[in-house]
Length: 311
Image 1 (spheres, rainbow, N blue to C red):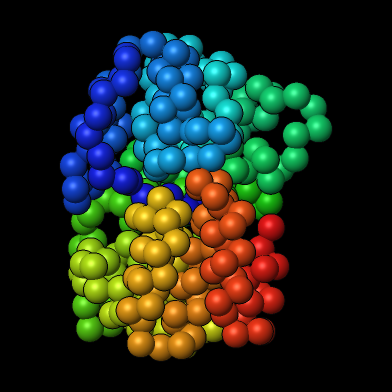
Image 2: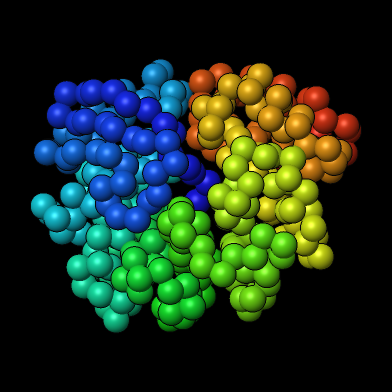
């Protein structure tokens, strides 16, 4: 899942936003969102953040909070009021709250109920994106941020769902703002401590930990990413920095180019640009087609081909 909180403060009818810079994500209220009528609030959220099909701000955590309240008011049926907007955040909030309500021992029941709530023919990938990722968030909170227990819970699921659950686990942990034992001198020790099957999802969120230790030092973060001995982890980490910078810029190309351009390694800069182009497309930010094309076109030929390959 590729999303971070945008610092903002404004009012929409029925919704109050009060997001604070540097605020960690430890509970369903961390988005600063006050929810009264979650179905109406989700509609208003989309009206505020989506203009002619283009996303004008990062509202994933707002959608999480609305989903959480949908579960409180309607149970799992609340997902019927959700859609794919804001990287499936509404669905994730419903499932996260359901896990916290029913408990980690009930996760297989949670998965089955989620499957039953969708029409026949919905793919495992769609169920994974909408439900299982949110379940991963819930497991981390249920286990009080014990990642080992959370990942063991993920491993109880159907094999095709595991990676979605791992992704939710590491995303939730990365946003907690608390990383006991994180070694600034050996930052890869955290991901390297997990079994190989978990490491790529861990690498996807390493940048959040790096930025916690080296705030706003994008060059240092990229160079730390590139220190990994494993090529797939090295690239996953650096590409995720591009995701983060695109989110912070809300898809604005000048800011993306400036921040990726701070990276002293050519490989790091190119991977950052690729990640940013991917995120601009994924989020459908304003002028996403033109922006992603321009980012890919600025890269050397082979890197550009890789950039254009993202769908």
